[in-house]
Image (cartoon, rainbow, N blue to C red; front, side, top):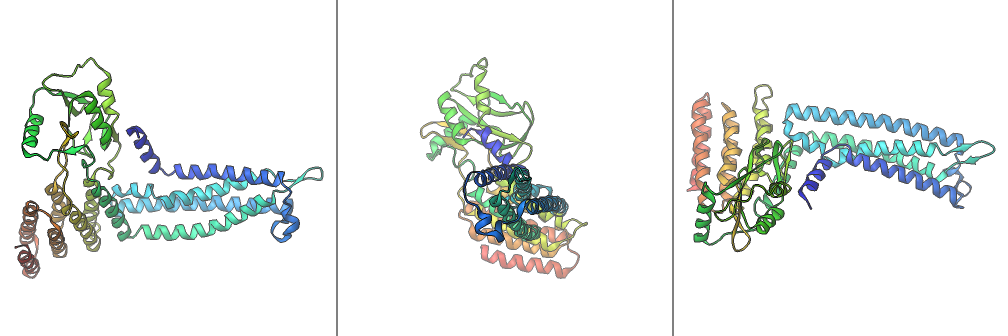
Length: 443
């Protein structure tokens, strides 16, 4: 699928209007279909089941009008609750988690359901005729409207429960955790071609890619965050043009208009700058948007949890429990990273170097997850101890000895910061005791 279509699809998924719009169109189709069914069949449900279908023209109008009015009122209530939730989450946790509420399927479905029932009742209401010359009451459509109204009661109860559940800290951080671990399973650039396993070929390819001459810069034509790279398309483009691509920015980086995002090299010859189609066609394989997303950007998932921890540790909120919960999930995410073999930056088509990407390594993710929470945990020995426990959890899962020095570095920094910021010897002793226990398990 072309990258621009993927980008548009992501925008639709994150909008509050797309799913409600589909349900509104579905209500039009349902109303039209049931009215046509009542008009062109010999069903006569009002004679077979008079208690269910025998409402009459005036009764049908009154019932549909009442349902339409109540559904519009409830839709307004649902919209108000959603806006209130978004405002509270933004102020209490982090503005970065608003995207999760915008793309919440339950919120979108409930609002679309109420608006759809409202439109359905209006359409059916307009087809009822009660004069002596023309008498038509779409009994099946009217009964369906009553059933949809009863379903709206259940939807409202479920929606209120869902909003209350969504505001809980555990729900928010767990959603971020699952979204981030899903991205870790397909860690960028793992799906981009094949790694160069031969050490000599890898060293030669790295020297070739690090040379400063012979590269032709390809600037971007818009500003925003690098959200997505079409790995298959980018590799095929490099193969078909017989060039080597160097991605100059990491996933999630902000680029301005005119920023060099790619450098292209073909042997020692510079590509012809007069061929205006090749830079434009290269830009078709990336997506630049207003904000970051987690699909190929694991760091953004970590950053959301860090933001929640920092907000909780701020003097205005001072919520140690929320900070500890965010740190626990940060440790769990880093545990997944510790078990993961990081993909090589040099990517080939199986024979030749084709793409060199910039990507974070294990140490970068660990520092992102622990540096700011440690600094903002000033004087809070409970949070400092929890950070040590999170490091211990990650250390138990490490699959490479090369990854352990950064964990030891973070542990040493935590102890040093505890000595500098904790007020009493008791608090310092608590941190040192846990550090000593952990050092024995790390030895």
